[in-house]
Image 1 (tube, rainbow, N blue to C red):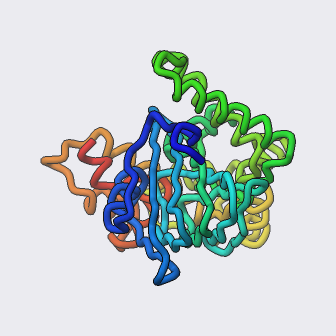
Image 2 (cartoon, one colour):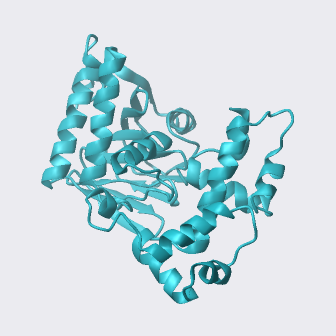
Length: 326
């Protein structure tokens, strides 16, 4: 490929043979990570073209040789990585695929990510801010998204819904490449980003796909609804599953099965999510000079700071101290 033929050629961020520079620049665009050339005699020929927008972004990345990339958890963003040629071995949590021009990878923030990009494997990458995507999903569902969104790792780019999503990506790319393109207008960019998120959520299977497509009941049976009311009304108090079940007049196993079947969670996991929401609401309105994260977390039953911080970051994509400062 010649320079002028590369995607986003007018948005060049760097072109280097220095692995340290490549790692630092890609880290600034996405997140800190480890980068290693897998063959000693190989020469790096890395380039990044970047078009960050508001809630999304488009990137062209090529290392020019086989590399291993290990960022760990992405935490605050989603990626769709589209190979334009070659293959890459992608592992995220317990899933593993070999991506290709027919199979993109969609790593989720809450899974350890380990990638081996082959030589001749340039990729067009679509970046999504995690909180923005989850808020957008919530608007489509008509309710808040409480559990982390996890996509299936492999995206079949030959499927009709995926091809429709790729058409939106291509439209966005072409407009970004034009100096006077539609992305120069914030209102239009916002609409394009919303369309890009909606079609991704419709095209690629994820934890909320059944609810989004109406394949499971929206309204839980009375016993589960009463248990939810008990949890939300007494979230600051010590609660066990047995106590919740007794309050609503059902057995423990029946209550657990009801939560699993109708909410795809457990009573205690739901309690933890409610408590995390209450902590966040307090932190957002608190005075950072007069309030500590530890005090608020303890008030809502989180007595292990390390576990609390990890759970909070997984649910909201930021640390509790960042929320308090905001």
